[in-house]
Length: 64
Image (cartoon, rainbow, N blue to C red; front, top):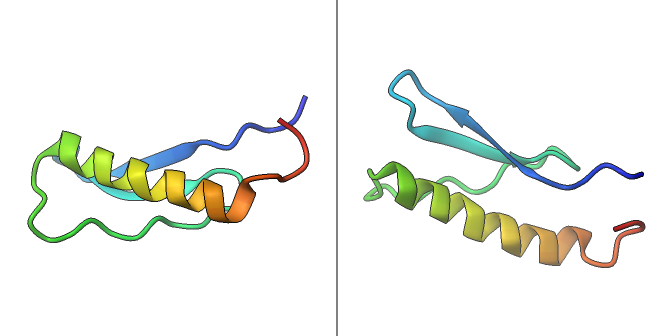
């Protein structure tokens, strides 16, 4: 069974997500735009960048 690609978050002391990275390759996702303050919006931002990352870097990679 191969390693699944996932998105890992790093949080600050106030539990706001500050970084997100692909656990498969370690690449960090681009930072959110400065006007995002809501945790859910920041997570959504990182998640959308992650979907783009998967499509560009890992789609069609060996294994499910």
